[in-house]
Length: 421
Image (cartoon, rainbow, N blue to C red; front, side, top):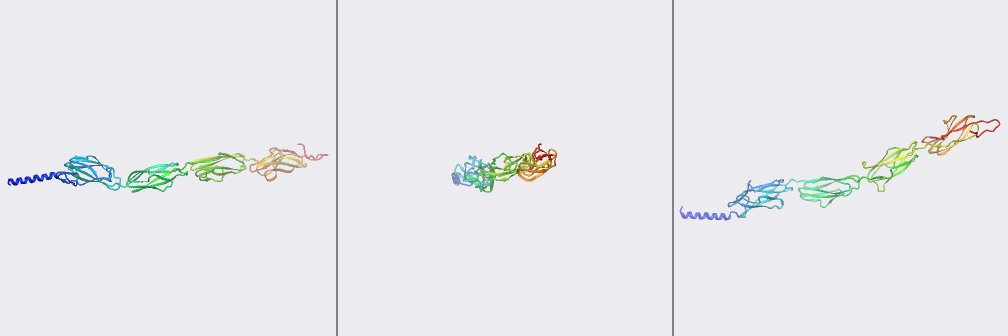
């Protein structure tokens, strides 16, 4: 080849080199594309950077033969994606990415965009997988005290959510809705006017549905009675008890001779409720006790009333008075008073003290009366006489005997109607 041709070829080659040098770092290009001698590519090839839903750090290895800077672009729905180190460099390098776990149910996209020294732009797509749908509530149950109050619940959700309740005594304070991520809502409960506990639910709806069980303690029981002790008459008696309770109550009495007009009830008015306690007649000669017990709720409050019924008494009978009607006839008079109606009355007589032979005068004598009788006895003998009356309690007598000497006629004298004894 002659010298002229050689010089011509050398000139063309130099011109081509000049053009290549001028265009080597200009314009846009896909990852891995090369313009002249500048290149930027992913070490593992391809044009995308995949990140798992739960990954929070990721290392991007690049291969390059030029100087560059890098940034995150097109990340409007992925604000927390950051470059932690390696935001500029020359040649091969690691770029450390940081993000949060994807708590949404949609993929998140952004771009890792390089700019070379000459102004060339190369971008790689970054994609984070969608998170698993979730909805958690903390706590998932709560018990309020009887006086009421407020409580805050924390919601972690992968989507928008809304809390609802049909419980009339529970109200939301502020908003009951939220979006994906972590948020809270608050409820308040007023005083429970009842002694029984109450319960209900709050339902939170998002990608799934969760239920919060709420309950409230019952109001404390109050129970009062206006008597702690009282005495009952032996003949049978009644007493009025004023009972005030704000819940259910049960009354019991440990003796069957004592009864109540009512044995159970529920909350009553502030003025209370009157219960009548009745005792049967005490026909024994001893005082007898009874205990009225009122229990509110499940032994939440207990009140007792101690009752004493006085002893029954046998009839009281006076000492007999007598008149001699003849040497064989004797007129007797006595009287009685009794706590209970007398069922029988009369006289005992005999020839020895504390006589046992009975002369019944009458029955059903009431609570007071006279005992009158005429006895026919034997002339010339001495008798002992005592009056008696019988009631439901026992037999009462005159306690003292009357000694009577039956005397006949004495010769030449009148009958002695009132012998001297």
